[in-house]
Amino acid sequence: MENKQAVRQPVVAGSFYEKNGEKLKKQVDAFLAAGAGKKIKAKGIMAPHAGYIYSGAVAGKVFSSVEIPSTIVILGPNHTGMGKGISVYPAGSWITPLGAVKINADISGDIVDKCEWAEFDELAHAREHSIEVQLPFLQVLRADISMVAICVRESNREILNVLAGAVAEALKGKDAIILASSDMTHYESADSARQKDEKVIAFMEKLDADGMYDAVMDNGYSMCGVLPAYVMMKSCEAAGAKRGKLVQYSNSGETSGDFSEVVGYAGVAVI
Image (cartoon, rainbow, N blue to C red; front, side):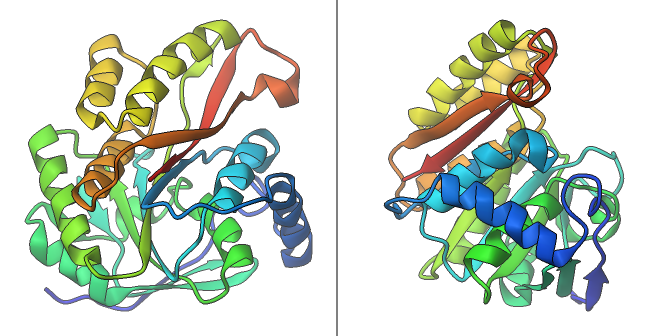
């Protein structure tokens, strides 16, 4: 299948994070410094995607806790409803105020070839923020990074398993990591959100992707990136991962001061 060149401009610079490159680097540096320490070798991670003032601390902690290889597959949810069920961004690059991140066209094409439900599609990515907000952290940590960007709206578990297998196969023998972009429970009290999120995180720590999927779907939890997280966990399991590790959990009330209606944020490493 033809994989055309495309360039995606940022859509949430100036709202979710600083629009000025110098200010953005300082913003990201501060979040990364707070979590600086010994880095672990992870096969996958989950990081939040809210505005940096709310979720940047958790994102910084998880990104700074793992080794960042040269290639990253980023799986994000589809908040807009636009585009295909499994939308792989074609060859080209994504722009942020810190510069361009190149799409790894070979791996992107391999995933599309290996998963019949995955399609090259720019529309799903056009206004979607969940992948974009991850990039500045990666750019600061690794200047030579290339990525695969996959927006996931398809919820059929069998199809998601095929995608997970395709990702695992495409990355076999490569120095790569898989990132799932997700926030946790939305717009509930901090106590209620934590109770639900702890149940989901417990499944992630056991690397029980199906248990996580069932908990979220059967109970109507508002974890927006459950589909990307499922694919990430299944792909990592196929690559030999054994467990998940919670790096940090927080919620928007830590910034806003309002704990009556929060969004939960979790940083998880899969090893």
